[in-house]
Image 1 (cartoon, one colour):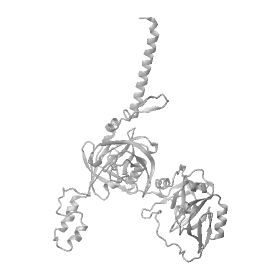
Image 2: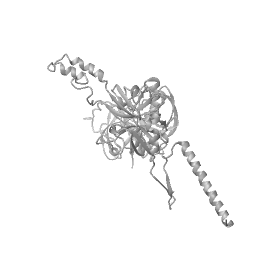
Image 3: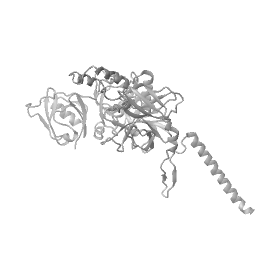
Image 4: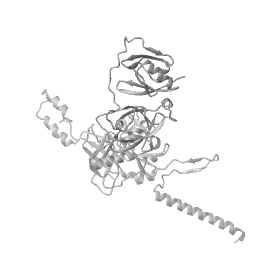
Length: 492
């Protein structure tokens, strides 16, 4: 052997050994974390220093976690329906009471029991424990009492409903089985926008269907959904996917698929999932007590806009602005005031007004919380003992109230620099006309002006003095019906 080549060969051998060791080490780490073929592979570094990426491979995820996904069929108990229908046997269809009693009974006795029932619901679910506890959506099983669960290996079970919660749309089922393939529970708060996720379910009855996409946004607030910070994705979700799991690239469940945004009834690129921590909190309460209890402050809040943040002296538009404190509520007893801006709860930042009901609702009643509040240009802390949210009462609802009669009350007085025409009525200042700056701020005819810059006003003199002291960015508290709302006047 040429001795001159020996050092070079040794170098190659050492390099290969190092590569092999590194490869084995990487494979060991990969196996230990159980993310074998799911992690996104990186392309070589580009000339500009950026790193490209291949698309992820979900085959390992589906093979390993697909067994934890179940199909759910919920229906009315046909035996009970048949028994109820038998009550019509003694009545002729010509009998005047036949139609009356028929409306009280679900099915016509002439319809066979094995006929398709439009009341049947189909959905998906995920096994969360080896002894048979399953998560799904409330709307999949609501009002139905015969729930059949089909496992990935085609075994079928009749499930017992442990409990359900309308507000979170989470239901907990139980089947009598052991050693089931339970899903691994992840952490929704670690998700990032742009991260890859996958759903497994039975859209339109096509079981074991896999769809994938990315996280579009987190903490989405939807109409009439005050307690759930939804995960928005572009994963294809269709009827039948409801209640199924949303997986991250590690194969951990991070959400329960619940809703889609659609004008046609089909998928349009926007779907929403319930964060798994919210779902598991609800499931644990249903399992232990059969019901869900949520904390309540007792305030009506509004968003802090950019203009309002300036009028309140904030550095940025974050928090929840208290527009009304309900009487005899935890908020009132704890010292919260109209005009306070709640910026954090137990040190957790309240970025927008929709964060507050979600954060408070996740806490237990009778629990003391520390609220970081912005009041009159200063940060203060208040300790409030939460109450129990009352499902029968919605603090955000308002009832119509007759506005003060502003006809034939005289010309009132004008504030030309703002664009307001006001009328003093029973100790209140009522807007009779709004234009210019006032109109742009959102003031309108019939509004009752309560405060200017945090100062109560009852007369023309009060108004003029408060306005002169307020500066260029002025918060205005007005009453509309039973509600109050803050608006921001931006003066030239």
